[in-house]
Image (cartoon, rainbow, N blue to C red; front, side, top):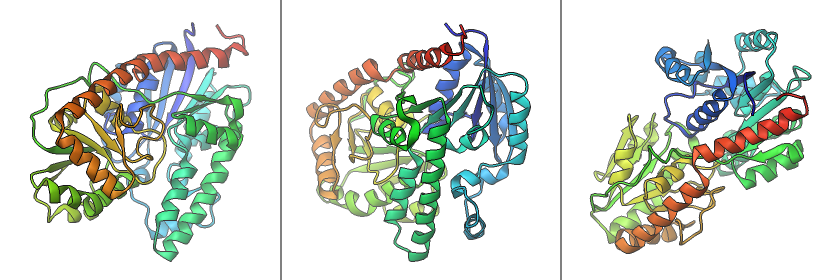
Amino acid sequence: MINRKKVLVLSARLPYPLDSGGRIRAYHVLRTLAGHFQATLLALSGNETASGYSDEIEKLGVRVVTIGNPRIDRPAGVADAVRNLTSPLPLTVAKYTCSLMEKAVEGFMADGFDVIHCEQLHMAVYAAGRFPGVPKVLDAHNVESQIAERYARQEGNIMKKAFLSNNYRKMLRFEKRAASSFDLILAVSSNDRENLASYGGGERVKLLENGVDLEYFHPQHQSGGKHLVFVGSMDWLPNVDGMLYFLGDIYPLIQAVLPDVKLSIVGKNPPETLVRASAALPSVRITGTVDDVRPYVADAAVFIVPLRFGGGTRLKILEAFAMGRPVVSTSLGCEGIEGQNGKHLIIADTPQQFSDAVIRLLSNEGLRNELSSNARRLAEEIYSWDVIGSKLLGYYDSLLAGKNIS
């Protein structure tokens, strides 16, 4: 077993509070590493108050150091896009570059860390091609170039499309360089693993699924109303696009058959575009940030995931599975999850298919219960963070065995 070795974890943000899929995954990966290493977390911090959040991470036995960089909380504007035209880095990576962070990484590595672990591709800029002889791990939450390509493809504005297409090409080059530079790359799904392997990662790309806390997210009684829920960070473009698509193309079809249907959109930082789209719909509630998503999921009869682009896997689907809530998702929305259509969830890719699936579930308690029971069992068998943590440590054992580290 790996004990008392030093791992430096680099993160684009503090992995707390647990209000986004990226933070949830990073937190549980860090929790696992902290049980077997002397773990130091070096993270960028924006405008949020870091002290209380740092305290929560330190409870894991992790040393926490934050580097302030307010740019990470500022939406990219036209000026940022213009400046980025001459940069080799994609805009979303350049946003997280910081000279103070670079100096801090160099300082820590001079102290003799045994492993450097990067949470998300954005942090690869601080480790790729550097610190020879030190094993480097990249936890790739998504295939970022895939997201960038899908986003560019869906943009209708010619000028924006040109910029986004250029950004996609930059991201692809950057991701390929990173895939060739790390000793271990963790992919959240089989599709992501195949893509990252083809980018140059080869056999060094290993599958480490997303997971769920099965004790925290447990089945609860549903009130019986025709309630739908979507849960996700509403400052992430795929989530915003998905909900605008749902409100415009799918929800009216459901209302035409079930006029008493209700919808809750739960997640931080909802944009004005989404607020405006729901303003004329009294049955739609946008919550913004909530302390606990479980009451909203528990109150829902159906959990919806109408995503049209994105990457990785949706932790929120796993949370819905763990709480015994039936899920209707697009194929892309449930990408990477080992659920079977019609057994663990319903997959629907057109507005009519999606609305029909939701109506069918809202009208059939027996079907809801069947999907819910199957999904909970799947979560228990595959997606427990404890199971995934053991898998992670196995990868680390193999990585470090070649360096004669016990």
